[in-house]
Amino acid sequence: MLESKAQAWFKGLDTIRFICALIVLLSHVFTHPNYEKSLNSDFTRSLAELLRVSFNGTAAVIIFFIISGFLIHSTSKNQVLDIKKFYARRFVRILAPLFIVYLLGYKYNHPEKAVLWSLICELFYYFLYPFMLVIKQSWDIKFIFSFVVSLITISFFAFSDIHALISQSPIGYHGYYWQLGPLFTWIIGLPCWLLGVLIAENINKKVRVQSKRIFFLRILVFLTAVLFNFLKIEYLLSFIISMNFFALLSYYWLRLEIIYFRNKTPFRPLELLGKSSYSLYIIHPLVIVIMSQLLSFDNRNVIPIVVITVTLSHIFYLLIEKPAHNLAKRFAIWL
Image 1 (cartoon, one colour):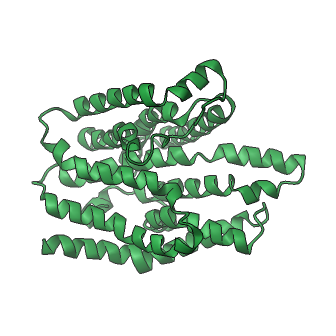
Image 2 (image 1 turned 30 degrees about the horizontal axis):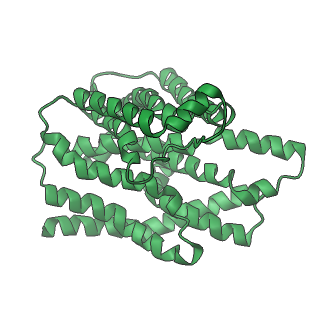
Image 3 (image 1 turned 90 degrees about the horizontal axis):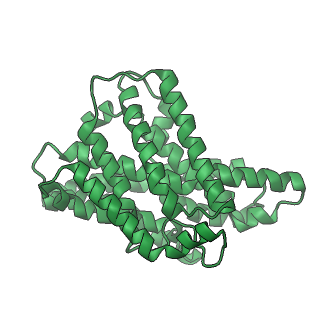
């Protein structure tokens, strides 16, 4: 999502994007009905429970939102924004690969619907960004306003989940972040996206971050995501309640992560795989459906399924997504 100059500056983000996309993939693998059917002993069932809790796909999407806001604002804040060109670049880059996945998924009842909610949120944020840019209030005020609106919306329209948490009764409990539907979930997620904008606004170029501090934060963020996943399952703490607070911790961590990699070299293979993180995100539901018809979904085949999915997604990136990036640039120039 960045021009080459900015990409050199924001090293490490592609690695984070790949890890987040991989976590989403694993969260769908370990909750797949065929995987659960393959569990035939107390040990495998206990292992499956541990794996299911360990990979919080929704938390990974929240991190995606923050990174997206950061990248968009970093490349746009110091220039006059041509709205037509901005929309052309952003919408074509998302919609062109998604359209191909839609065609491929037709025979399989469109498994890509599982991730569509977050892409619709992104499109809303891209649409709104030029208008937010001209509002003469600080980004801190815009974030606070969006956070309050998000809390009010949750209070009114996700009250059943609030009641379930208080009463510890699963009656009416939904649990998911996207329970308001694809057309309204963007309201809940907007504060997360704006946290990325705040990173771009306030990042301190002179600060150095020690390795032990960043490693501690990585572990803390991962364990917090695991904890919220556990609380969602066992204590009815819905993601629609917890994830925006998780975003606050992720904001603090990502800001320091970006600073840290100014003076560190990320692991190149993960950086390269991170280029195809969007492809992995949109195509993995389809690959999982196909793999479930070809392989038994058990612990022996998890690694092959993941490797095949990552490989196919990178091929999809080279054949479809990367050309879509170039198409978006040419289309924007033509406008």
